[in-house]
Length: 122
Image (cartoon, rainbow, N blue to C red; front, side):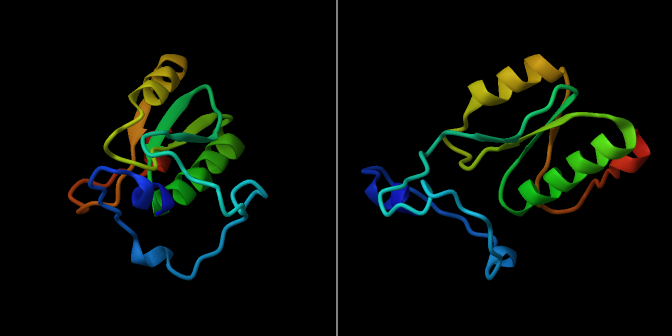
């Protein structure tokens, strides 16, 4: 929100109301009053070498859970990328990850027209 307020350009902030009331651990750096998440910079939430999950918002936690299950059950190391902003999109982060893993899954909470269960894939 701070980055959006301070940006001289128009910025749209989308929130997932399901996330209201949830708590997350924060680093001392993130708790600083001067801390700002840069717009357009993705974050690798979990490093991996076999598959890349590209996601945002509530699905970051879901992908981290799936990544842990893939590791435990199939010894698959999934990289989870939190895009944090859709435009500008951190394409370099995604491309670098896919070059490493050769596989990508885009995870979104949009209209559930096509649902794939990963336990049927592996």
